[in-house]
Image (cartoon, rainbow, N blue to C red; front, side, top):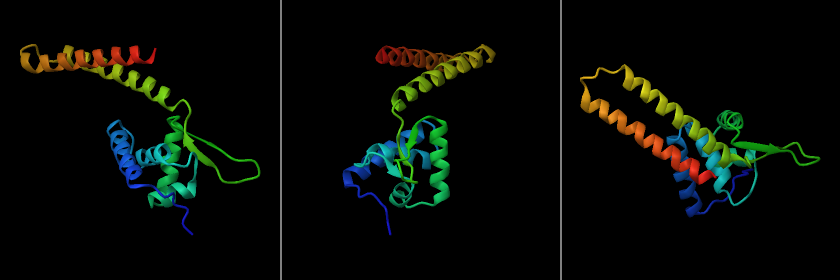
Length: 150
């Protein structure tokens, strides 16, 4: 018996787009698909079997993805009274945690580029300028995100 959630074409498209962006943000492909499904699904909170059957992948792939997402504090679960099945949903602080972690990564990346720039030969002016531009862009993006979160 399939426990798959029926998704509309629109929801399938949104799931694919969100998964793609999540992967670009550093999530492994299956983790990206799971968090996208939990976000796009018309049903708030899905069981393990619903996730597995909707995505059509193995138990181990879903288990690994959920464990990873829980470690990142992007997914939480509850167990209804008298039931054994866990219900998974995006963490309530997911968006805030995501942006806080993203800001930390931006700052780390900017610092790393500054170290690289300091270590580079000074006669590679054009390339060094491209690194300076990355540092400036990261700084502007970081400032804009901080301002948006206030």
